[in-house]
Length: 287
Image (cartoon, rainbow, N blue to C red; front, side):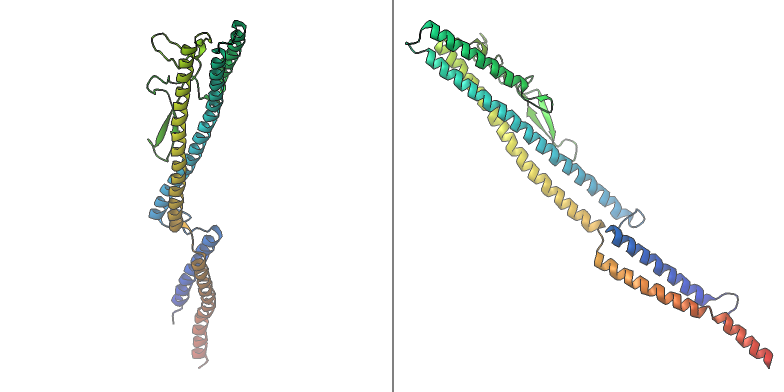
């Protein structure tokens, strides 16, 4: 027995302190659902988790970008569909005017309707836009290589992007003959052969753009599914790193609680040792 230092009580207190600390940690993990709440818990795993979170958030935003890109192409396709309908109607009117039973007055009426349709065609080309971005004007000519593009970020990292070509499909932008510059704006019902050549070339140009946009839209759909799948896999891996197993945490919490209660009882017992020394000294004195 020692009077100056109650080593037994000090050792019990050290164990008691560790038990209360473990209990507090288990309680924190249970309440937060995480086993790593700060860098000191596990610096290496925290670093890995933060890198994964960066990828997850980047992929989630990329998924939204892909959806916006698909919506943009659907908007463009809607405009192209209406433009196709107008050009088809212009073709019908041209064939109607070429009938030998049509008088010059009839042809003038047909020409007036065609002019109105061409004006409507140009309005669609000018006003088809997505979030302020014009889709069917201020772009590349169909006859020239694509140099004006709309960039869509497809992934979480630099360079993971898709270039969607912009086209200019106004009535003066799809020439049939580069030499004389014949285009939809110039068609005349009195020249049936020339008018049909221009109209068919215009329809071919519109259809080629629609097919390109459709192919890109299919690619975006596949990319969206792939981005979501990768994001889910990374999120599952991040969960394995930082999410707490509540069952294990509850066992640790209960174990630490029992040890803390036992430590309290033992400290009360060990703190009586100096009193026992005093009792011995009193017995010696009484003799």
